[in-house]
Image (cartoon, rainbow, N blue to C red; front, side, top):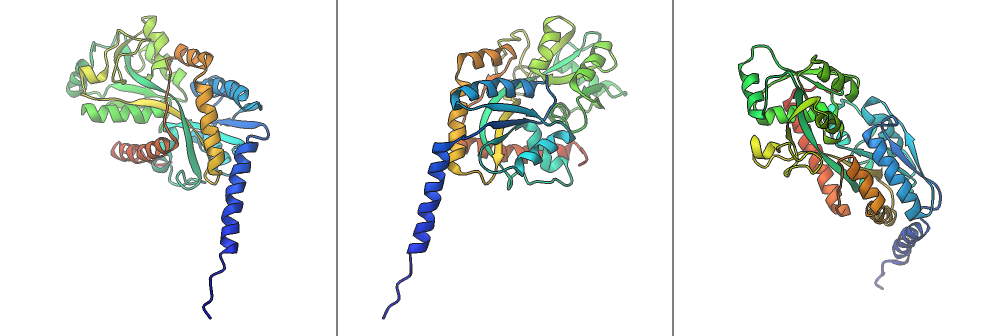
Length: 324
């Protein structure tokens, strides 16, 4: 007599899993949602987080609370979310910084690939290259010429070793074929203050961070990293049009959840955030800060993040930035 395999158990398991995902999607969120911001209140990421949280609360019909968990290059907040219950109620907002982690830290309490799952893009903005008004460079070509001719390295500032400003600047210098002297600061404000005082000559910062100084004539902008000129800074040429053809580099933010979060819940978060990001008040709030909404499918976000990890790992290695 031929024995037939007992399919009842595996079929039942599959049905149960499908029903579990369906119930999760229908019930989500089912309680307050915590949006973990890995920086102190008042910064750019915190601003985006609070704008999104307010609108997302309305979309979900449930409270979305921002929790600031700064420190250790965003690893404390990231670990908190990686180890959270995979129910979609604890969400991390992070971006380029997270893509640096595998190359920047010798050991991490989580694996960015195995323990976290990208859900959706939020915003992006270009970087802008600015110099002190007394620095004798009117263009990127002038900066390159000075860097190649000067026996003393030109000092540039950042918000610290391994910060987005630091690694992004090193990427630009490598593309331009020059070396500048890195001066790390405990934050962006401190670096900007020393740029204004002439203690450093150059800063490569986000457009939202440099816009006020540029508009006030306190610093001179040599180029912006978007492919097209910014509406907020239309007089600033793109790096692509003046120095490096097709050069484009943006600072981006996205949402992440624990890797084991059910697909249906992840899809629900993605859809709810897309609705929140389309609200006129949200679009205006971002535009006021020089931010653009970035869209993409779940698959787009995942592929993009994997490429960013690989890309920035190469930049960090080439720049000789030692792991912490």
